[in-house]
Length: 154
Image (cartoon, rainbow, N blue to C red; front, side, top):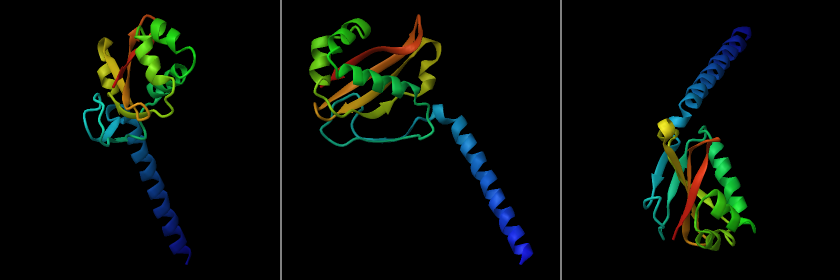
């Protein structure tokens, strides 16, 4: 009986170590594979059909948090100011779509590897209330990495 308990503890210990090792490996490669699967029309086009996106749960979500903060700000009365000054975008077009929008779902994000050597990273949000897509572009500026601009596609 005593040997069975020791064997079970050893087996459980090995499983825990393997689970931790597998999680560590997945965490280390998270930024290279942020999209696991995408099905649907091109993410940059507004489709009337369904788009299905599966993201890596271990991806770096810093840019997503910044984009979601921008979306919240664009839904406020400061949309005109933000569009014109921060994004250098057309406030009339941007604010018409964003003000009454209640739902924004991330459907695409470029891998972080695209950001090397001054590149940009694109996050695309589906706005089903307005049948539009919001594309948020990230890049390096003088203050560092952040939102460069955004556009709306209808």
